[in-house]
Amino acid sequence: MKPALKRLGHQPWLGSFIAATVVWLMTIAFTGGQGGGEILTSALSFGTFTVIVGLGQMMVITTGPGNVDLSIPATMTLSGVIAMKIMNTDEALLLIGILAALSASLVVGVANYILIRLLRIPPIIATLSSSFLILSTAISYGRGIRIKPPPSLAEFATVRYAGVPVVAVAVVALSFLLAIVLKRTIYGRTVLAIGQNERAAWLAGLNVKSVRFATYLLSALFAGICGILQSGFSGGAALNMGDDFLLSSIAVVVIGGTSVAGGKANVPGIWGAALFMYLLVTMLNIFGASPGVRLILTGVMIIAVITMAGGEKASR
Amino acid sequence: MINRRYLRAALPFLSLAIVLAATFYVQPRTMSYFGLNLMLQYAIPIALATIAQMFIITVNDLDLSIGPFVGLVGCISATLLLNDPLLGILALLACIAAYGLVGALIHIRNLPSIVVTLGLSFVWLGIAVLILPSPGGKAPMWLKAIMSYQTPWVPLPIIAAILIGGIVHVALMTSSFGVIGRGAGGNPKALQRAGWSMLKTKVAMFTIAGFFGVLAGLSLLGLTTSADAHVADRYTLYSIAGVILGGGEFIGGRVSPMGSVVGALTLALAGAFLIFLKISPDWQIGAQGAILIIVLAMRALITGGEARR
Image (cartoon, rainbow over the protein chains, first blue to last red):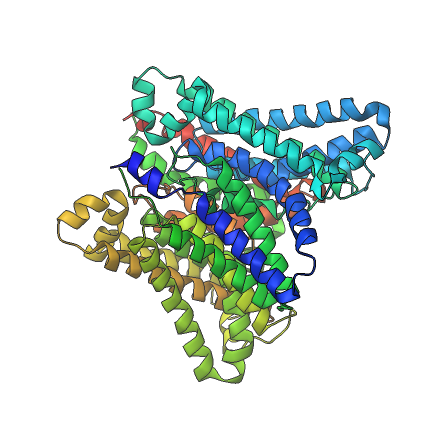
């Protein structure tokens, strides 16, 4: 193994940014330079939501093979529904709504960890089963009523300066913070260590249990934040608002260069991958591709990117 | 003390028995030929998809595209296979070959199967939408005839389940090919050093998975009689849950064909059971999640000592 050398010669996140740039250039070449800026703005707006859940998913995936959070979409929905219903378009209840929604998300994180740790259910199945329960809770609590977000939340989620959405800036800051946490804090280093070799991490005296617990909490919390922002952005919570995020939260993590085998996280790659995924769909739309062709090309692109990026050498 | 391994192997059957007993208790009229047939008919395609998933899980991969693949097979069969049988068969064979190729790609480039099959799920869905933009088409007559065939005494789904589980059990658990296949999941390095080709093994396992995926698509179409690209989207999750309910593990080549089929039956039955219980539709999905959790919690209790190695 030559991780240092490999890291220098082959920045894992570079590929996704190059891919995003190429797709964007192809799009504006087609339109003759029209709307290039607008496309970037909307890519930032929509991509930001994928990035938020992607960050949580990345932390979970980094803790090792088999770890993945499939309850993200359901948690987003639950959080959005709770936030909208409690706020009830009333500015005064904004904070209470946010607090309630995030607490509910944390409860989901705790429940996921209990299933994984105490019942030793594989994380994929544990988070899948819990997502069914969460979704039912959201359906039953939400009762299909669409309540508008309070104006200030909608404003925060949609406002942009010079084409740059405020939320995107905030999430860039969050990404930086998480990158520092990963590189410089005991928690972050432990997450990476567990992903590389759980047993070695445990033997080295690292607190494997509580770090894994914190990671599932973090993923649920990010899903909750995303749910609130998404509801603010799209004028209310919808029961299917999380649907697209199941696949995209995993796709951006892996396309962005994070190792599915765990132990190797990549924060900037998530941004590149999220922008790439959005720009790709935009390009195909502008090219006038039929829904079928659009789906096929999206799939082929995902496979092509991961094939070019290559798999990591199996170390175990 | 009872051997934990036997208990563990018996657990899927026990879960099925409990769900079945609960269903009979809530709705005694299901305790008949027609009741069972009606409740379990959709278990056939789910069981076939679960077997497909099981072959992938055997070699430590995961297939997130099996649902859309089953949908695609339905779309091909309700259009091409109906109008031009030769072309239809060729298309289905191409689908199976594609699965083998994906296995080769995943192995040669050492790619994460989750992502590759994630991408594939878009490809299958896209092709299906191109073939059949809106739900429609028609199942070939012979397919409908097979799926609605009324076997004497024992309903078709039960016979089908025993047949599927039995055949796959013999192929995977008793043949030398099966040992190599499971070995590829258990210890790929040892297998390679012993002179077996990992590439060939993976391609073979993926191809078989593709074959069972096609069977799942055909049997589902025989039941629904018309196709829809999205009809089987949930099968991805069902198939994974079925394998795990059946006692399989995600890594290590530890799977059980009979268990997987029984897991699929349990899932299909749980759906019917929840409808009979007349719980609010809001909680239908949630109750399914709860059943999954309860069964797996039971397994954790039973196998508690085993995991500590």
